[in-house]
Amino acid sequence: MQNQGLLKELIQCLCCLPGVGPKSAQRMAFHLLQRNRDGASRLSRVLAQAMLDIGHCRECRTFTEAGLCEICSDSGRDASLLCVVESPADAWTIEQATTYKGRYFVLHGRLSPLDGVGPDQLGISRLEQHMLEGRISEMILATNSTVEGQATAHFLGEIAAKFNIRATRIAYGIPMGGELEFIDRNTLSHAFNGRTEF
Image (cartoon, rainbow, N blue to C red; front, side, top):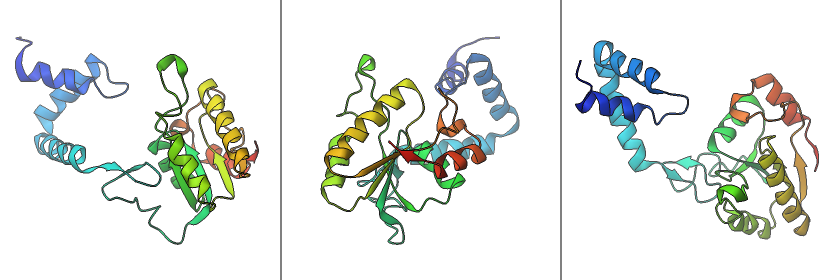
């Protein structure tokens, strides 16, 4: 069978997804072409539209189609509580697993000098602007429990101290090296509710 053209390109494009290697991508491509062309067409339309229309919230930096996300525009949320997470997926996970009713700030990464990720890449100046506004009484550090996540939490805790903001860290129900989006709801809920002073 000829391994060229659009089929090959489709398989290669599917490999850009996390955890998808060439064999998985091949299975997906053949499934879509053989059994679900309508689903594939809808996927391509929605994906193209999402790439055009989804940007970042001007307050918390999560993904949104509007200037402000649903959480930042909700006046019922407690603006004095700010939960700092590494990714929009982490904020989504906390929303689904806990009763947290504060606001978020999404770093889109963690400090990693070896990878060239410093405070500028994480939007720390925007976070400090939030602190300067004087609304925040507690900053909940919900970075992952990796070495880089811990270093990021420590760095943010020091900044919070400069602004006399209470910094707390989510409790250790999460295994070291674990990432929030892969933790079960009960463990995450327990860890979140049992956060301690940082």
